[in-house]
Image 1: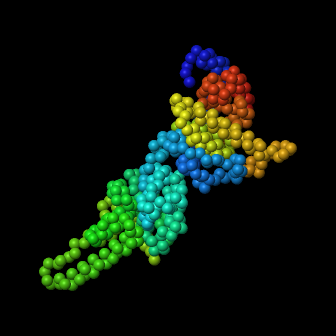
Image 2: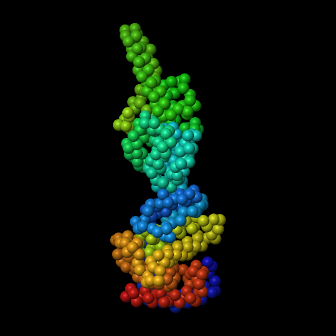
Image 3: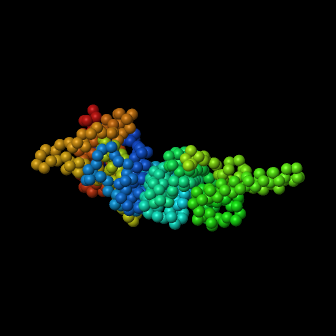
Length: 308
Length: 154
C-alpha cells in the first residue's frame, strides 16, 4: 500500500481522530494484545490439521477435539487440498522449511519395512514403504501429520491386522537424526512403545550414514544392520537374500551362527589342548561386547522382557 | 510469521479458546485453497489473512446465533454456549483479558476497524480496502469505537 498525496490527507484525518489523548488508548491495547500469543498446542493441532488436509482426505480423526461439543454446522471442514508447505509458512514464527523439513527418521522393520520422516516437533511429515509389503500397510494407515508415537502405534496395529506379524515376530525400531536431543527423545518414546507392543524387539539410535547405506540396499536401518551382522557371521549369505527375510528370520540365523561359532570354538579348544597354536575361528561381531550392531550403532535395549 | 496476528483476531472475537482455535484453523484451511494467488508483498498476505480470519469469526458468530434461535422464539444461549468457557488468554494476563473483553463488547463494526487502527496500525484507506467499506465510513467507525472504548475503560 503506497504512500501518496491522498494518504497524507488521510493521515491528517487520522491525527484528528486520534489526538494526544488517544495515545493512552493505543498503549492500553498494545499492552493487552501484545500479551496474546499463539499457544504451542494450538499451533501443533493446526499444523496436524493442515498437513493431513494436504492429502485431500478427511482429517476428522486427526483433529484433537475441542473441549466443547461441536454441531455439524460449527465443525471444521477438511475437504481442502494443497501443498502443505504453502500454509506452513504462516504458522507461528517459523518458515516453511523449518516446519516441513524432516529432522529425524524412524524405521520399522518387521517385515514390512516402513520409514517415517519426522519434523523437529516429532510430527510425521513423510512416510515411505521400503518394501512391497509395506505398500499394503500404508494404503490403510494415514499417518502424515500425526505424532511419531501415534504413527508408529497405528502402523503396528495395521501390520498386526494384516497378519504380517505373528506373535514371535521381531520388531526393530531404528532412529537416525543429526539432532542428538531429538534422537534421545524419540528413542525414549519408541522404547515405551516397544515395552507395550508384545513383540520381541529392539530400539536403537543409528548413524545417518547407516540410513544412507540402508536406503541404497532398499532396507530399513535396523534390518540393514542385522543383515551386516549376519553376513559377518556367514559369508554365504548375501545382502539381497537378507532383504527378502523378515527380522525374525535374520535374528534366528544370527543366533544359529553364533551357536555354531561357540560350538566350533569349544571344539577347537578341546582339540588344541597342549598342541600348540590354537586355530581359533576368527569370528567377529559376536565377540565385540554388545552382541549387536557395529559401527556407530548405539545400542538401545533388547526387549528381552517381551521375548517368548 | 502471521500466526500470532491471526490468533489475535480470533481472540478479539472469541473469549473461548476452543472457538478461537476453530476460527484459527478455518482461516488457514481457507488459505490452503487459495491456490495459485500470488501475494505482492508479505503485508498483502497479512492483510488477506486478517480479513479472512475476521470473516471466519463473523460467520461462526452468525451461525451460533442461528443455532440458538428457536423457531418463532427469543434467542437463547444454547447448552454449548452456557458451558464454562476456557479462556483464550493466558490465565496470568488478567488486565489484558479485561481490556480485550471491553474490545469484544463492542459491536462489529466498530470493533474490527478500531482494532486494526489502534493495534495493527492500519490507515483508514487500508482498513476500507480490507473490509470493503467506504473510507469515510471507516473514519466514522474508528471515531465511534474509540469513544466507546474510552467510556468503557474509564
